[in-house]
Image 1: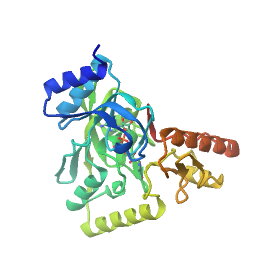
Image 2: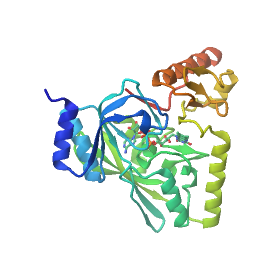
Image 3: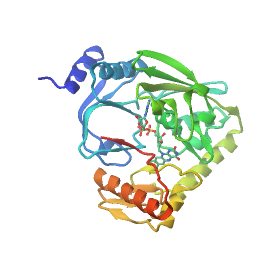
Image 4: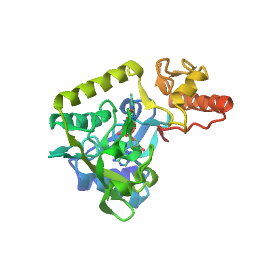
Length: 305
Ligand SMILES: Cc1cc2nc3c(=O)[nH]c(=O)nc-3n(C[C@H](O)[C@H](O)[C@H](O)COP(=O)(O)OP(=O)(O)OC[C@H]3O[C@@H](n4cnc5c(N)ncnc54)[C@H](O)[C@@H]3O)c2cc1C
């Protein structure tokens, strides 16, 4: 009998023979945390139409699927993923119209910040150095150094797989909060693109700010090891990394996973960690923080199983 993922491959490639599809896709090799087994199938749409079609086929036929941008905020199970990974990285167009920028979901935040710099637009500098995509950033309202993407968004265009329609959501309709959005809350929405409004600025000052932020990242974050960034969300009224540090957990290891010595909020793949190592270490951190401070810290990173 033909499996659901084989059904996807047949249906999708019949419609879009030019689109790249990979079977037995190695998740460890293609995620920044560098853990995980194989996904049955990965597809790489190059247009919004192809992306919508991939999601629609999966949703309509009940095929498990996950849309991933740059896979920098995800930890994948060692058992792999019995479904379709839809990667958006080829949808990476960025256009500048005076003080507005339209970016496709797979565009990198670095490319977006550089496009703003080249156009002499200020307001997106804080995105520089976040290794994610526009879609992933809208999904979780990515932010750093006092800014979050919702601060500069005018609208987000998304595909709804239940109604099979595309809609442009004004930023106010997106329910943005700390690491929160309607895209996060609603599985049937896939971000296709977004529109930002920035301000005219001084190119030299914008570039200097971006350099400063990259230097701060290099100094404070363990960028030399694979990770998914800050593993836990901010905890109301506390810096989670400080709580973890104050519990004396820096350098704690489970298998090949370690709490970074440089930044206690980062769980790093120190030495060929498995996903099980990472998840066990994160549970250890949660239980020690709970025991010492009575606080429940929540994972920011998505778990794909
Ligand atoms: C070294 C390092 C530093 C980091 N620093 C920061 C930081 O300063 N601030 C910060 O906020 N984050 C940071 N991150 C985390 C991460 O880069 C961001 O969360 C980024 O926005 C995730 O984008 P992505 O494309 O990698 O998402 P992915 O990891 O590919 O996906 C994450 C989630 O978003 C969903 N998603 C992705 N694309 C779409 C789409 N088109 N439509 C709907 N859902 C989608 C996925 O389904 C998944 O649930 C850091 C990560 C690393 C490794």
